[in-house]
Image 1 (cartoon, rainbow, N blue to C red):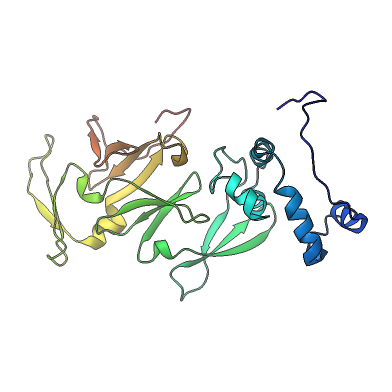
Image 2 (cartoon, rainbow, N blue to C red):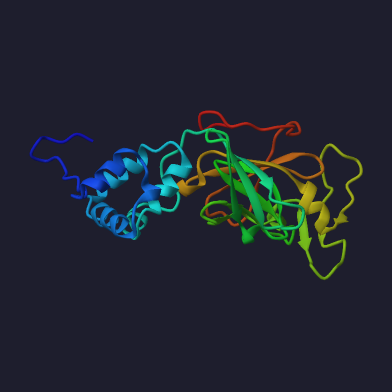
Length: 260
């Protein structure tokens, strides 16, 4: 963004000389409540376009969260999840302890610092990797979704019982909730068989890859699924998975330049 001298936005800085010295030394934790209130008041008066430009230039998600949490005005100006792709070293997600099922620790390698987050949305779900910072979560009943661990936002993918080979899902049939078609042109034994929730939760979906960040609402998901490691895809907003007819099994799938 470029400005002429007459068009340059005004930057509001506190008049208090002590506050200025503290800001220059980056010792924000030592601000008094009054000084902090002064700073937030001036930040809230900055043009929205300028705030957005500042947000776009942040490459570390922690810095983006800190910017949003500065004051209510900045929080309302910036989206929960940045629209730009942050170029940063991925964080490592770890169990917080052996007791809690919803609290996780995240290691930020850039800072060599651990952050703890409560994510109640994942309770009872199996976490199967991350995609653009979103976690793929499976519960087997038959929900399949993406969860952002920081904003706790969710994006629903088509459920497990919408894969073409799944003939039925009945939660009232213990250990045989799913009925699967075994019909394949290359198999002699084509019997229909039943599988339980545990299988669908842990094994049925082997991998999911996204074409782009799901916050764009214009993404395609490609999945390797089932006993024969077949391929199916969906686009944002789809209610079911569409099977791909390919000559061989899908041992793995990668995305490069918006292509699988």
